[in-house]
Amino acid sequence: MGRRLEPWYLLGVALLKPPTLLLTTRRVSGVSHVPAGGVVLAANHISYADPVTLCDFVLHDLRRAPRFLAKRELFRGNGLVGRVMRGAGQIPVDRHTADASRALGPAVAALARGETVVIYPEGTVTSDPAGWPVRARTGVARLALLSGAPVVPVAQWGAQEVLDPRRRRLSLRPRRPMHFRVGPPVDLSRWQGSELTGEVLREATDAVMDAITAELEVLRGERAPALRSDDRSAPGRTA
Image (cartoon, rainbow, N blue to C red):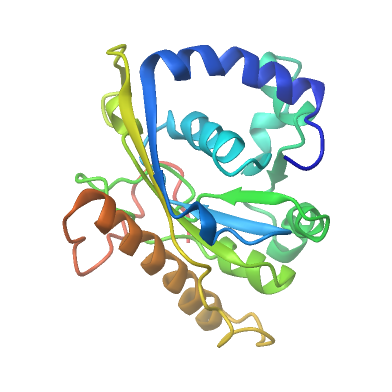
């Protein structure tokens, strides 16, 4: 691992590692696809538990310190969550600011320093009943095209068995397998240097989501629906 983890990062790991070891195992493939230097890891979002299992995967299998893009509300206050998010160098995003490029400035700077930035392009846990990715926001494309950093698709499956995203029910059954499959960087060269119009951002975002979905199909051994759900009535979803 490159830079040393901040004390608050170490505290978060110390608190979450024991239950992660107790409740899960990891099965991984494709880690060699992650290039050196600053990189965006773009993952599907299947459960409120998967930030913990995904962080564990990035830390221990990729040997990198993930910097998650997360809504600014999580960074506020003096509670444990806010303190850890701030002290662990996670990246707040103002999701509703009028200047979307400026909102991603801290993430672009982190990538320039060679950091590993993790983003959930969907912006929230999937609302698809079968757990397939839904139509994503365009922040992942904006971040990639602003920074020039490679975007690596990461498919994950299994965390929904620990914490059901629909019933919000936690299962304490031990040693459930968490599957992670990493694909090669998404080719976004077609859009590099283009004006960041809505059309450009949507096309590049869809390319990223297609790559994530393709890796998830391999993990699950089945085909995703031909059309990606666009459930804008789901909590927390915006364009």
